[in-house]
Length: 79
Image (cartoon, one colour):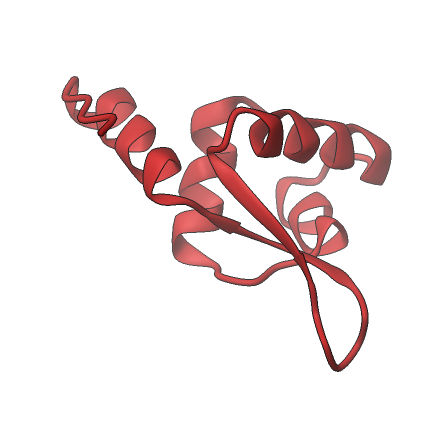
């Protein structure tokens, strides 16, 4: 699982848990959680607590979308 794959998944699937991502990517939960944390620290992904279930959820940020555009199209607009 690389950064581009994670960002692509998060672009298509909003408000997912680390478990959702781990299952979709067929990776261990711990490896997925660490990868997501790295993306959060880079401001490519946002993490928030769901008010109903109290689970941590993740979504791609505008900076993450710009980075994904760069990976896919070679264009990077990191305002």
